[in-house]
Length: 390
Image (tube, rainbow, N blue to C red; front, top):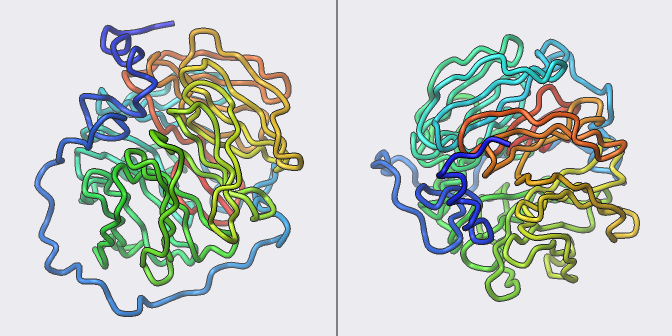
């Protein structure tokens, strides 16, 4: 396992961190340093009633992940090269890995502090979220080539409204959700939120609302994504550090990883209230549903493991060990047979066989690998992050 001096320092701070403590994003102790000067906001006044487009109906009302079964690639995603894009936050680069050979294809410099790689709503473009670079770098998934740079203020994370009309940049340091036109990236509305460390979210089954984590405030917020308005705040246990968020297949339960307490919260998706807390492992962080929508994979970053939860019983059913690893964020390949995860403080990427939990590859990458994107993935459209598809 390759590890730099900086990575060793960060590993000691892992129980209080999601991204580098010297940069911005999930430091776990205090608000982040302010990014470079943001553009003028004079043109960003909220519209009284944002224009709405139709939200696609679920393929199966009993399963929000029905479109994500193996083989259900769109005509567009069938043309994509099977690659893994790994943003190395500390290096300002993206490492590109061939899924079949596990070999590094290239390393590309993008912008300062790339945090996640996000598929666009229409699945035609991947975006590198350059947080301190105040930009997105576009990638053509058909070729794997990196293209234009798009100015966006403080894009720690990136999502899309379920109707595809707006791109939503999570401006973590600014405590905002910024709504852009999804095609032109013209700023439309800035929603200031009472949420220190706003970073991850997932959507209700009907796509109208989002549950959003507030890493440094020990709470969640609920946002009406059609009206672009704050709806509710939900308190968690003291000192909680909520991270990734995922909806259950039946749409009734949200799961929220808590890095501080080493487990996941279960929240009622209708009432938007906490049901209970379930310990999983130290540094619980990333959440990924299996392709058959039966299992939730939970990465325990400082627990060097992945926990498995049954959606049917809402209980843990297994655990995969990654000796010396620091599993963070990632995703499944199109078949669902390989789970790819970044080793946040280990400067490596892991490929795990989902049938056995065996680590089939450990691939050296740059410093601080974070929200990697595995592409292509099955599904009709993307809600953002590293691949929330419906």
